[in-house]
Length: 145
View 1 (cartoon, rainbow, N blue to C red):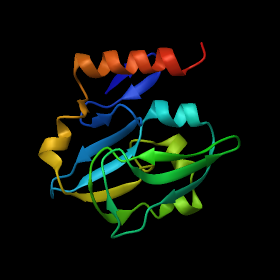
View 2: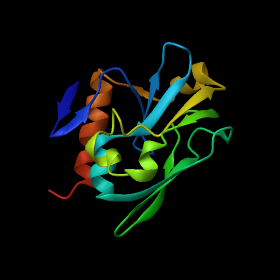
View 3: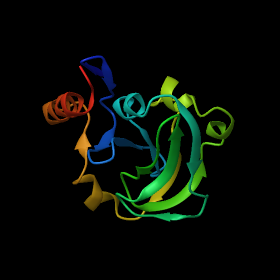
């Protein structure tokens, strides 16, 4: 894992730049998705998380969930297309997991991907200089110094 100006950026994930969300390839071929450390920090304290239902078809770049903070309600974009096979039920009772552990217990959903090989080309792979540069630029443009 790389630390970029105080924000975590795991090496084993793929990142959807537009939505600050991540995708993790699971051994069974499914993909786990969540919100980046930078995304949760920008959002602030997350009060509510609404994830699309199991069985829902999701398109890359379209909302997979909605989060609510004290001053903002907005969508979280899916980094890949697919069908939701599992949702993180723990977020219903403990939405703060998105803030506390965005790459661990704060994951959003697990999808059966529908166009993975093509869509991975549109994501940035963690552990690369491209990923670090992208994250630095996002931090610079989105975080008040």
